[in-house]
Image (cartoon, rainbow, N blue to C red):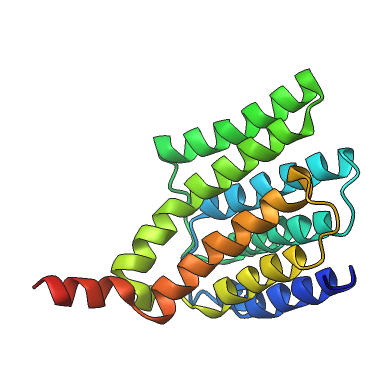
Length: 197
């Protein structure tokens, strides 16, 4: 087990890996969908407050960083002429899941309900990016996903008490971001399609 301070090393790695995307957003080199980036910030931030309410320590700050970074990119998207609002029923569903988790958490005072709904909403919000990474890996940058995965793995290595509120979001981020990194870095989709043809 690593000392708790390593959580902040993971956060720094995640921030460092995402800074290029942030500046690319400001400079108009990428076209972020504002709805996706908003949902990627909302779900982890709800999970973060859920974790805080349950007394989760340093692990909660990993969750906060996973929500704060997309929030900065969401804000940067307003300075980018190429960014867009593309509100589909799927986006409304993901946002609704986050809000339902928040509502049920307030109603029941069971923080893990909000945590579960936040993970579900974040996963669903990320599905279009996974599909895009499979079919068009050249349209994404692998580094932000690698550093986010490392952030999750490092946080998992610091956990002392294996309660669901301590590890669930970190485990989800480690796995989901690893999948995205592998799809983008190794261009799995195009390789798979070539083997079929």
